[in-house]
Image (cartoon, helix red, strand yellow):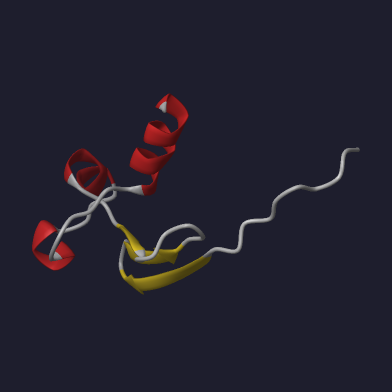
Length: 67
């Protein structure tokens, strides 16, 4: 097996419900994850309790894969 060349040092904080804050290497500011639209509806998240919507983790995975 080849030598490991990179280990990500990430930290994730769960704030409330689906709201999470990720501290990622290479980013000077935290990245905020949550749910929105159809994703919130699928998980039965009440929009009134959500407060503000943000991109979901799947949105980041899709954009990273497509890029």
